[in-house]
Amino acid sequence: MKTQYIIALIVLLIVSYFLKQYVFNIYEVTFSLSQKALYADGESTIRIEAVPVNAFGFRAPLRKVAVVFDIIEGKDLVEVLDSNLPDGVIVLKARSSSGKVVLRARSEFQLLPAIIEIPVLSSLA
Image (cartoon, rainbow, N blue to C red; front, side, top):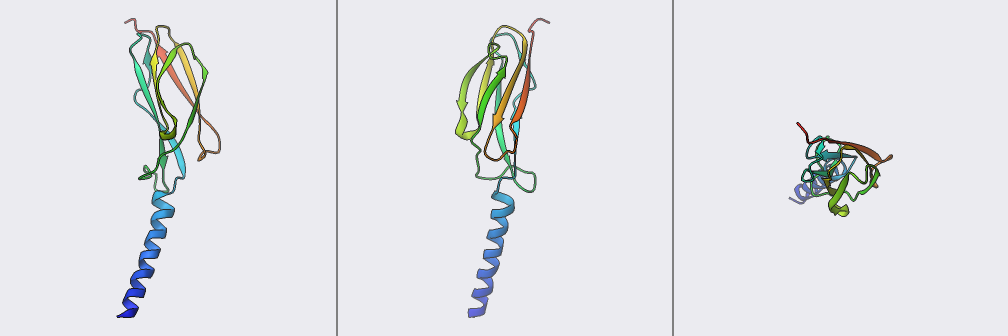
């Protein structure tokens, strides 16, 4: 009876180590954009979110990534509506002129910062 408990404990430790190393650990950070481009109409918004990725290539459960976003180019084309840096989320709203917005995103789980380019298209059809 005592050996069954020891075996169960060992199996539990192995499974918990496997989960920690491969499921909950962050191996990479990708960025999810709510749309591909903004329109220069003063109302178009885009939500950029950092997605922590585990060893299997899926979102790491119960984990968030703190990200610092820097607008490198096109600062006058957008307005920052919401900036939740501890959760890795930023919401941008287009102003009335077209061009290209370039963001640099940095987190502790990346070797190099990510460059995100968002075109701001003219709203004329």
